[in-house]
Amino acid sequence: MSFIVRYSERKLVVAAHPAPSLERICGGSREWMPAVDIYETDEALVIVVELAGVSHKDIKVSVEGRRLRIEGWRQPTCAVRGARFHCLEIPSGHFERNLLVPFAFAPNAVEASTSEGLLTITIRKGK
Image (cartoon, rainbow, N blue to C red; front, side):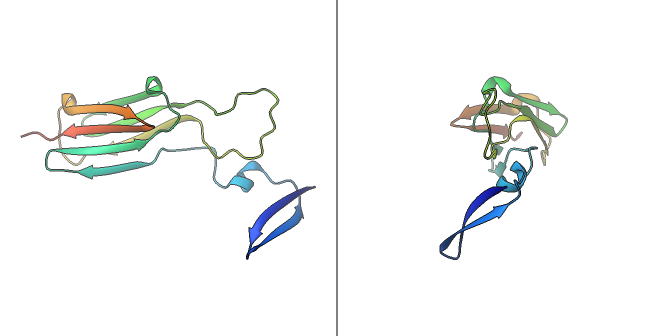
């Protein structure tokens, strides 16, 4: 038996429950797909991918036709043997995003950079 403390209607509620799984405590699953923002200007399509905690060495961007593939790996935040987790909300492991670009482009028109946990991919439009 475990106890869960939660905030409800301006008061703390303590309830006895069978020990729930980490997924029930934290919500969600262990699979993940990084969030993206995509916007277009007159000169380019810009894709910003949220990749906090992912080394630039673990990111691969590839182009096949009009398809852009972003894939990589995020290491677990804790690798301590014997640790007892209370909540695991930060996903780790392999991720992949496949995006269809709305216009044809040359592979050399793609530029990518990372800064402060964001991967920014710029695809210049042809003239």
